[in-house]
Image (cartoon, rainbow, N blue to C red; front, top):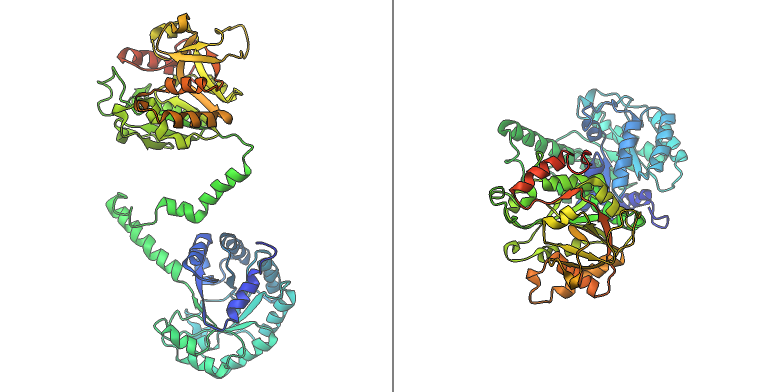
Length: 551
């Protein structure tokens, strides 16, 4: 809480002394407290009944006061409005009550209500007329001890009079209320178990507004609220209704799921998981991460996989190429697992053909509806908003050894492409041939090599290619911005729909962007035909090139 803002105790005192009738709603944990605040309530009643019930125990002081305080802390943390605790009898004598006051103030609780019964208490609606009441003088001493202990002068102590519940009559109720008020109580809560408000209204009339008066109309709920206003009631407490509503909903849902053995009939009738996340404040955490963890690099990844794949018709009738299983696991899942193992968890997959068949959790699907008539560049454009300050851009059907991703993430360059210099791979396909500032010198550690051009031509400007781009790149910092700028410029070209990723890379180079090369020598595969599948299975099992297991 801002040190300059009023305390929650002050906010509660303002409600008690308002010139109009105010209302508190019961809450029993952090999420119910937040719901009460979002509904518009200015304050919360920390009900002893519902705090106990949510733990499955009786309202007989079976929960310890420390458990109560711990739960109140979660409610206080989840809200900004004041909480009035239903503190039963104060959980013991005056000394226990003093300690309770200190602990409540530490947790920014606005006030506490104590009732003039004996510890351990029993709920007022369970044989209330047979419950003994505390000695008046002793209870007054407890109130005085609490007032002497509080450090915030606005902290509120409410005295709850149980004389009407116990059948001791109106005069005794008024006598006790007056004694408690003179002992320092900030408000009186008068309780009744009758189904009408007659004795509550009589008490209010005879009390004549000596101090704020609080009621709990659980039994006489049909009384119009205007009656309470005319009687001068300061605060009305709706004391247990969130818990009771949740019990009914949970019972109904549990029976529905048990009987149907399915979630189909329940989903749509209950809160969404996203609503739970919202109430938990998930969005605030994401914003805080952006604000406070800017020094921690968390790369994202965009995986391009919208096409069916040429030459694989027999395997892709009911799924896209990236969902072809290799070694029992779809290509996309293999890549997603490798990225997540390296801290790249923000994954965006551009899908198109049979996107409905993609069954890989933990990825954000982006649909390129025009996949059949467009190239890779159009797929990237559909995900351009997801290319952040540090982003890997990959073909979704790649098989790579883990160290290649490690090296790509470790390379300090604004734009870096992975180029395979192995002759066997160069000759396997005429696509994505890389022409670089120098050939791969495998005797040199961490060479500084720049990309000059990517082409499907095996003799660009009369030169032999230096390798093949494998379909993996990373942009970060200025490089990410350069890619965004180049992509927006290229999107204006009438032929943009037919462009591939090499066209974008060449356009960046033409604009003066330095593209660094990360040379590798084998240890990756793409699948372009049925024959490649056997190689892929061996690769996934770690029996290709190095014989090392896949990492």
